[in-house]
Image 1 (spheres, helix red, strand yellow):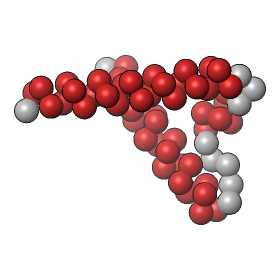
Image 2: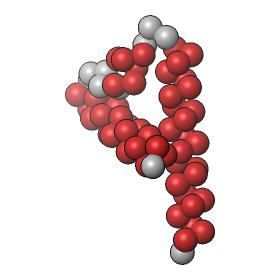
Image 3: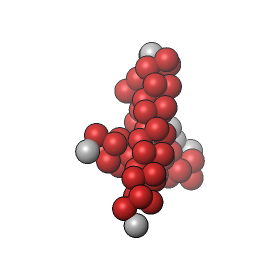
Image 4: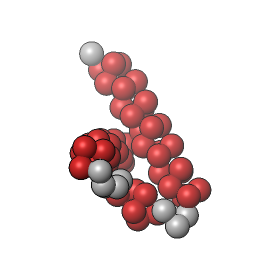
Length: 63
């Protein structure tokens, strides 16, 4: 369940990053919230990525 929420949050964040690129704005919420702690920000990105891999592998096993 945690992996589901991390992937959802990561996807929304990437959507905002893309939108921010078109609007010439920084809409990266993870960076806005954790920018003062870059190592924590990197851990969040790693956790989101690992969650996506987990979701992909469990999704493929069910099919």
